[in-house]
Image (cartoon, rainbow, N blue to C red; front, side, top):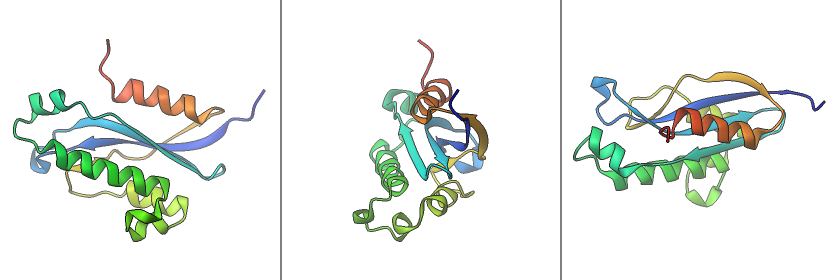
Length: 131
């Protein structure tokens, strides 16, 4: 039986009006220190966001989400000094509490043997609408 490894994850949210504390989940960020793994899975549903938050600048949300993905991937060419940090430091920076339009939930732990499967599962359960 494959060894189960500790992972941490947070849900990525769009919070258009921070003072109202209303949000829509758009993605998941998953981290495993032992595997030096940091991955994101983001799905932005324009219609859903606009139905809940008319007038929201969807292009701005997509731009911020892309920056988050690039930082998580460690893409140095993104011109972000954060992207140059080591994997654990990038995860901690990405999941730090902030008052911006893109936020993350608190960090949650778990155990798994297949990180790609776990990321898919979390994305389906926490982001995608049931069919």
